[in-house]
Length: 312
Image 1 (cartoon, rainbow, N blue to C red):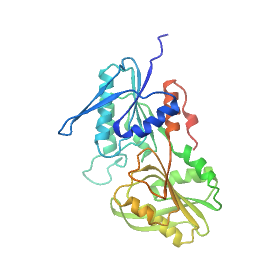
Image 2: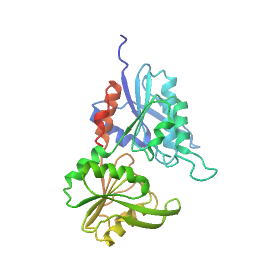
Image 3: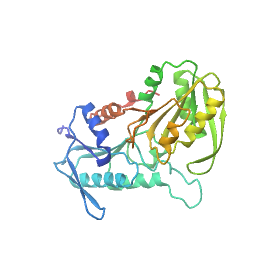
Image 4: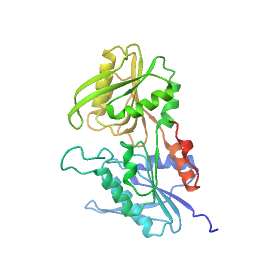
């Protein structure tokens, strides 16, 4: 039997903050990769150590700008051309995931395009978390390990010790996620039904279910402009909710999101560190997913089952 391929872990430029925590949890050192930038904005990636015959893990969330995605693609290409044995892209946040279907004429399916780009670059496996749409896994012809932030969110929700707890979905699309949490925590569930005339703009919203005298926890995969979230919290308080908290995996927090959250009826907002916060907020708390990804990397490298990583 041939000797086991050595493991090498590298980080993209803008995910260094999380990669350092992941490598610390895994008890491994991050490898050295140099990103050479030219005056016109073009850049190139170069590994400063050999990866020949190595099992290479590349940690990079692909949040905006698109440089993060392209840097990951170039790191994959460089590792392949340097004769890496296996290349695994560790993407805590998978960008362009909201473009998972043709919901109107003459639009692209961005998530499928990203999947094709990663595959063409030469990646052998994807490790990601809380995809906006589960079917994106089917866009790949390689293994996709789809992790869930529930493994850190559920214990924290329990630790809050909230009486009369109700789980809420901010839209109909998140009903499956909320229903799973609701069953696991043995609590009722409510749904926010919203109508949008265009992206990031909520024209109308209604609460389906009873929130009077309840402590509500809204669950979502991401917070972008926070318009839906803050409007839902306001309506729930108007309908008699004792408190409203939110748990969302990916803190995109673009545009007026921070201001909306600060001025909202939300007591607290919990997010993961899959995307770095642009600034601090008294209401936004960060729960790290570093240990989750460190454990998964070790299990994948050692060809072990990752089913123990899933709480719900």
